[in-house]
Amino acid sequence: MMGFPKGDLKELLIACARAIDEEGSSIATDVMLQELRKLVSVSGEPLQRLGAYMVEGLAARLASYCTTDRVSGCKKPKMKKTSIEERISHMETLHDVCRYFRSGYLSANGAIKEAVRGEDKIHIIDFHITGGSQLVGLIRELSRRKGGPPTVRITGIDDSVPTYAAGSLLEEAGMRLQFVACKYGVALEFHAAAISVEELEGAHLAVIPGEALVVNFNLGLHRIPDDTVSTANHRDRILRLVKSLSPKVVTLVEQELDTNTGPFKQRFMETLDYYAAVFESMDLTLISRGEKREQRDYYGDFFEYINQAPPSDDSTRIGIEQHCLGREVVSIVACEGAERVERHEPFHKWKVRLTMAGFTPSQLNSDLNDRIRKRLQSHNSNYLCDERDGVFYLGWKDRPLVVTSAWH
Image (cartoon, rainbow, N blue to C red):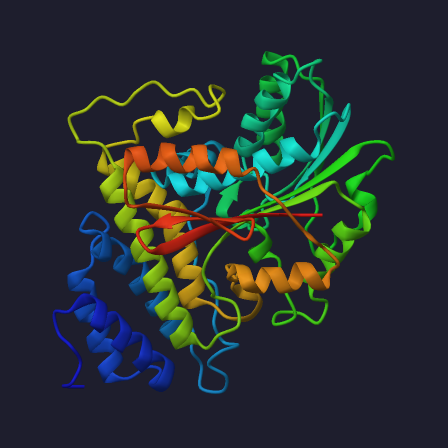
């Protein structure tokens, strides 16, 4: 109990995680948690803010241990639900501040646009549509196509973590996309597939012969359970199902970290390293407190989001950290088994899964990715933008945080 590193937040977080994993509840872990709570703050420096959510996760993990089976005894911490409007607002503000997220969407949209060039009828299946913001830019780009826009049908699949928001994201996404399509003169039909991925079958996707099929996995494939959660292995099942539909292109945007199958201590260290970079990037890209934020238009220019001034007030930042990033951190740290919804995998593991499902890599639009890189780095030279072997890595400093790839 006397040997833990007092005052050093990072080292104390690691020591506490190790002690909880090895010892469970003890005098030492109780003392470490008490010490940690003195060092963390949701309005402090990046590591202090991240530490607040890691401590919440550690405390929930410790509280859920039982004497017979510490791992399966873990329970999901209670999360305050937010409204649909708040959920979408928090997510879109996060993507404004952490520009590598929305840049990943733009890169994926570029691959979709190339794959459906010359097609008159397009069907887009989006497996994590949230508020539909990624498809807003795509609809606008399609509206500018020479010869007129195609007709577009979108099948939206709801957030696989419905407890994160009260109400249906699908209804809101459908209304927003219909509004955008009407504004830009694109004939759009929206179909809401309000069904869990565990129950999803090909018939729910309403694929029609003659339409150019596009499938988009946008920061959601890692939430579909695999064989470590269920023998059904829905993650690989969904990939095989998508392949059987013969899509023109499949786009994958995922966070670049490994929180799925490794032991808890490894997962904790990976989470600490990844989210420390995210929280740091937020601070260094926020505008000064006295500067007025520019008017925002979600439906504007393809690159307009990069030029928007992010929010400067603490309440907005705390909101997006709590309702977006904090939820992810707590899930990764506190939960096991089916209760843990955040199960990220690095790109090399996604590549194996996609290849085993029968997919072949498709090229991204390198010219577009170069434009994205120049725009991002004109705002902050710390942004990482690197295209390797047809895959686009985006991140902060030397840490890749988001990876975009395309497949067929």
